[in-house]
Image (tube, rainbow, N blue to C red; front, side):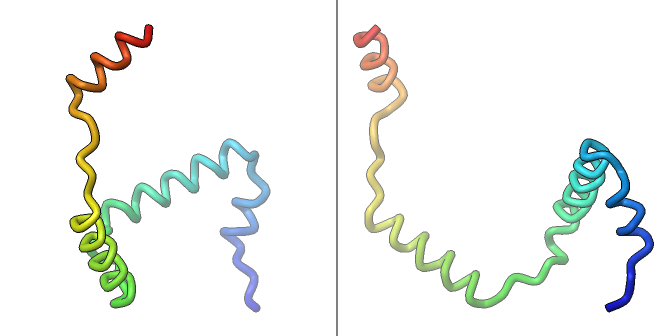
Amino acid sequence: MKENPILDEILELSREQRLSIAAAIWDSLVTESDQVPIPEWHRNELAARLSAEDRDMDPGESWAELRRRIEAES
């Protein structure tokens, strides 16, 4: 395995500096998310979950109902 001098330098930095670099790298990937390939099995799983969600969807309480219940319990 080749050594990576950039990685070696990064690993010598403090924890805070490494976290900052990791966040910057992650942010740069997010802005390019349309360029990240998505495996077909991910798409299939998402479609299956969304379909199941539609069938089993429970709308729950409205905000007004929830707020009334919370205020009544206080």
